[in-house]
Length: 355
Image 1: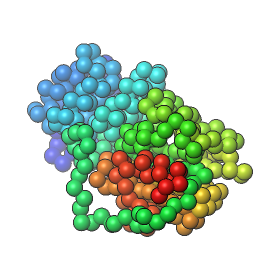
Image 2: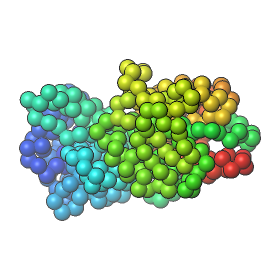
Image 3: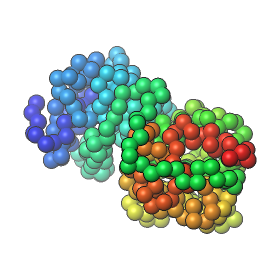
């Protein structure tokens, strides 16, 4: 097995020979990538890490012996490497394991490839190679409890950090890369019966959204459900945007689900959600923008702040990818920038009227 200098080095971990060979073929067709290994067990993968020195790992979840979740934990503890989970099933157990792998340090989940004669082959193949390339650029760290990077001089100080805040009537949250564990951490601090509804956009493949909502429900105290058109948001409930559809606040402050075209390349769009919250709730709105690549959410977050609402961008010290929140801070869209561990307590204090 050979590789070319300058290309992203990929290690495949997949127990199915057919899928392993298909992944190898897909990777070989992308000029950005170079295959440095293809193994069928997690144990082999761990042994290969120091030899192949991959830039990114394609990780199956269901493996003989050690499963992909435990492999992810060990890799992130021993030799942190960006991991893309390749999920072959959307049944509950497989999705639960995949979501847990994200919490353990994996960066994203994508569908397993289909045969070359399948109509969806090219689309899925492009998704896989793009995710492998993009995630290889993420600077992952050893997973240690309470680990926080030292702030750099380039960070902006918090804005209006001590100014009294109006209790919101609704909270919008959005995340992309690194989002599931970040959302679980923030929402996991909120008590059952939290007095404000939460609407949420997470960038993820459409087939995984039901599983993501189910997993999130299992790790937080709040009720979590896929958003439905026409629903009036209820306190203590998290409404997740369905896969490949926009979630916004519509007339009469009801949830509205839309098949409209992607906004700046995203569907669902955090920008559209935040903009609709600003229009519908004004000073009684709140927006929270967490880890993720790109710029989605910054524009809408600015509109919430301009309408008199309170906005939070995740601090660089805890963001897996400091892209979306960084753009929001540069644009002055964030009332305050907070590390993950402080966002939940801040929400509780605001919603209890103590700021």
